[in-house]
Image (cartoon, one colour):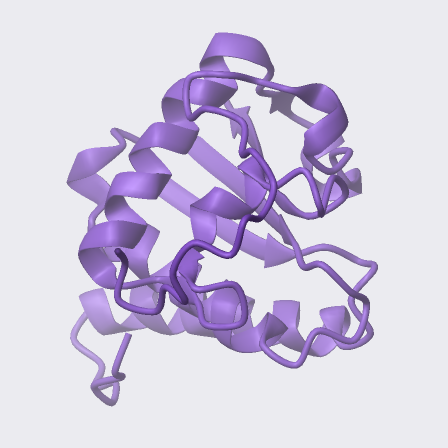
Length: 168
């Protein structure tokens, strides 16, 4: 049983991590369609890595009580989860679509995903990872601007500027 698990509620049968079920993942948004959107086995491979990173870093959705990557496998929310695209084999673009347009955890979950994936960059082999929340979220512009500022701050931090230690 996971850290936030509520036990067996007789809930739905989840897809397997080794499956790509297009009807159970969100459509890629415009930030992804400018790049090579991952489908099939390529999507599955990256998603397994994301799951492992989230497990190590504790990126959990407390509402559902599971590793946030499992949202892609939850048939109750076919329009929510993660989609991926690759730019020039160097940049992984990740788009998180929360279950609702007003998801109160949207900012926290997207920020946690971004920090986990960027902190454990040796696990996925990309030079950079850009995580954004889907446009459908009511505060997507503000959240994505902050994520960009965080990314810019990390670049500044690597050149010697100071940045506060953050919990994620």
